[in-house]
Image (cartoon, rainbow, N blue to C red; front, top):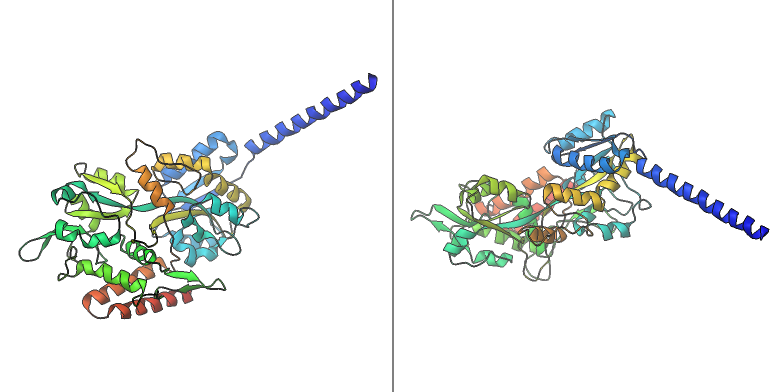
Length: 429
């Protein structure tokens, strides 16, 4: 019995020590300080600050984390200058369209920290633009996918029951939804396509057409170097880019039955708010400002159109949490990035923005919301474009549209010109 008691005491003693160790470890993790972590980005300050306050309420180790809102227009230059002077942040919200031009300004997150498999299982496919063969450029944080807004009153008056679901259906609605005076002046339009300057999201719309027809715009070659594949040909005589360009410009050709837009029209968003544009293609986040902009506007939200029997291609605004070069607290910054891109923080972000999550395991749609199911579907079908330079590539596509609309170049010539211009931008990078 004496030996048994000794053994029993030793067992209970070991269990007690183990319990003390586990408690101490658990308490230490909850209170572990990530240190001072400065985050910069162009998302609204009130949203990110509220997220940080929510995290700090459950973990006092995040009290040293702060956020600074930098206007989108000056964010790239501000980042470069801060890195050069050693005064940069520890974490940034890197837009997907800056991955190519500013990807060399951030540190790769090792696959030992976040495996490729875990990344792809956790985040939506559009986030894979941040994946490289050597590591991860950032953990996806925020997505604002595109949707289709339609004026229910104009559709009802024209006897059209529902908005177009496929791109080819857009060719049918101008004859019923576009109206003009005897002199040809448009007073109501079916859809804003065919021009560039008065269509806020023209580039997003155009590249989604190309992508939906089965062609990437920029893609890595066998050695991982990005190349322009914009003019790539398919099995047909006309390349996807040529088909997309022809389809797009037809809506501004007065002699075509699809005619519904021209350069004298107001901004597409303003026309939709005024009730003279039947369909508006915009970001999901715009639903609230559209509602505020005209409370009497009878509109609804539908899924972004797709190419019939083609790829689903929904453009989106996407941000990831990335570690810039020169970050003074990379370990703390990585911990903050993992927390803010995690499921709990993403649920908080959904509540604050009413937008879907970048994570596959965070449900967003609720049965009492008319929009959330559409937003979530759009996020899951979103794609990203390896943009060599956002401002310059916009000029490339605009020049193509102008060259074809004015008759300066034929469709195939404009596409070849665009291919060469995109490749030149990639060489600069």
